[in-house]
Length: 506
Image 1 (cartoon, helix red, strand yellow):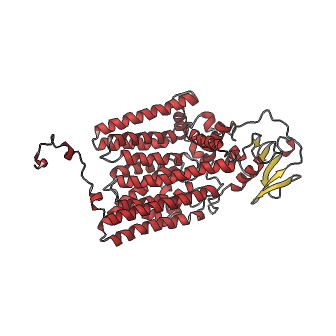
Image 2 (cartoon, one colour; image 1 turned 45 degrees about the vertical axis):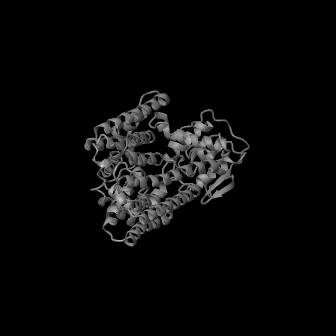
Image 3 (cartoon, rainbow, N blue to C red; image 1 turned 30 degrees about the vertical axis):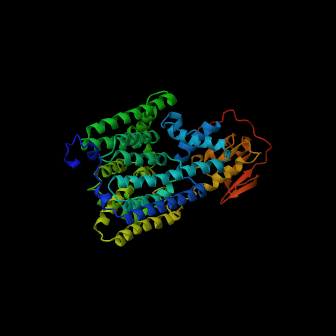
């Protein structure tokens, strides 16, 4: 008997099976196998690059990677650390420091109680989060209609490109939140997303906002996309989930700062109402595309062209990406790191655009060659990541654009570690650089006063050692050297206690 002639309500088993997507049906097994093989290679190389730089670079791109994450986490776990203004006035919530504190706490349990150990653990964690984000980029491209092969090419544009590699190991809110952003959109954005996928995806987006407030753009954008599609029920579910996470955000602030949504209110007032972020520099509207072209001249053009090809097929993802980039472009103060959450979205769009290219190519060899060429271009970018300068990254471009972007202030941080290991240190002054551009107690790891360059003089007896430039040892003796800097032991036998010592970062 032919069951296809039964009424729909009787033939429930047949009607419940979703038809295969055109992309899946058209994908030949050899192309799928090559795509998975490329994905594995891309993820492996991306992890290797990230871990290499995580263990090699002691430098600082911007103080936030220390004083909004490592230092408050060190204070939570070890009981001391410098306090930045954000954690005096409550302009940041405690989600990111708590995440890093968990890592430091786990490290402490297994004996990683020295900076070399626990910093490697934190940096390695963020490096692997970046690798997982490359996999989520592949998933997002697949969810947006790309074939396995094309999606692997798109994933390579995030996994291997020099700019994502540079930022990957740094304990910044952008890096902590990018994985839940990408995976959340991969689950919640597809038109045919299941209820479970929508719940999980919206929850991940809510978590991303908890880690970085600016990711609220993706939450509002998801709701806008669902409403534009007239998916009223899905929009209601997403709104309910996101409202729950908003409540969690407010509750966290209430428990830590004493007021509902305190960190969001202070942060938005500081940046949008008072416009004080401009004191760290302002840039023109075209800053982000200009700097991306400078940092990755060939690859950024390739990725941009492929992303444009994806517009007819991935309008929702394109809208979210454009909204995030444009809102940041309109803000006077700009840093390339602010765009980190959008980079995997651009890569996923490029994967969809590559799929459109592959569809017009005839034969497996041509499609394989095109995809491998994209992966090779990304690999070439990653292999040259070590040559990045601050000017290419849009940082300090008016004062020292030719300086290497790697290991900046690494010598002073290694001397902080060296000083912390000495039994005769009863106080330390860093004369060579502003304290905000050092690793603080996260690197020093010694509960004694750590003075800035404008702190007490050498004759105050408040400190026994100084970090200064070679040639400025004075009456002291150099006990360690790093590049142009030296750690100097002053000719004193002990430190005079400082009852007025301030733990606040100057």
